[in-house]
Length: 251
Ligand SMILES: [Zn+2]
Ligand SMILES: [Zn+2]
Image (cartoon, rainbow, N blue to C red; front, side, top):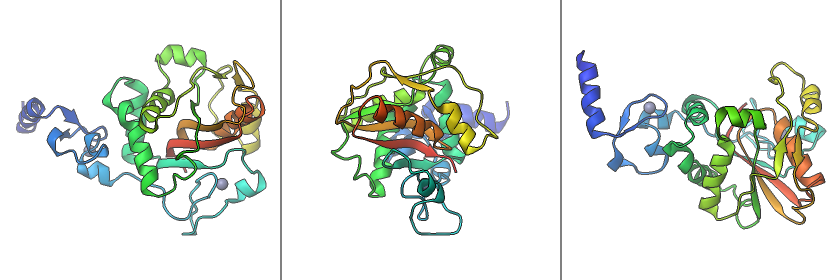
C-alpha cells in the first residue's frame, strides 16, 4: 500500500463524505452550504452557471452577446411553456452529479438537489414565475420499461425534494410516456419534434384546469422533450401555464 493510499484510508475513517466529482474526502463540519456537502472546493468552483447572454424563454446561451433576449428558435417557434429556469449549465462536476444520480437513487444527492436548484435560481433573482404562482410540480416521466430497468426516475426524485422545499405538491403519476424511442442525436429539430409528438399522454385528462404547472426535467438539451410534455399538459390537461425547471441546461 503506498503512502497516498494509507493517507486516503485514514481520511476515510475521519471523513464520511466524498466529492461527487473527484472523490476527494469532504469534512462534514465545514459545510457552509448544500453544494459544499456534495463537492470539494475545487469542483465547487468549477461548476458552470447560466451567464448573461441567454434566451429569455429557453435559456439557451448565446456565443456573441452578453444580453438576455429571445433566441431565433423561440421567435420562429414560440414554445408553449413560459420559461425554462436552469439551476446550472451541463458539464464538469454537474455532469458527474447527473451520472451518479442515475445509478444511486437513494444517495444524499437527490435529497438535497431540490434545495440546491431553488437556491441557485433565487440567487439570480429570476424565480418570480415560480414563487407563489405554482400549483403543481410534474416531473418528466420515464417510459415504464426504462423505469423497471432503473428502478426509479431521477427527475421524480428531484421533484420530491423540490416539493418539500417549496411546499408545493408533486404529481408524478398522471403524465405518462409511450414506448422507448431511439436516441435523438443527429436528428434535425423538426424530426425530433415529430418523433416526440404523442410520446406523452395523460392518464386522466382535464385535471389541470386553471393550474400553473412547474415541469421538472433533470437535463434540458434540445427543448423538444419539454415542449412535447408542455403541449400535453396544456392541451389535454387544461393547464393555465407551464414553467420549466431543470437541474442543468445543456448548450
Ligand atoms: Zn472534487
Ligand atoms: Zn430560446
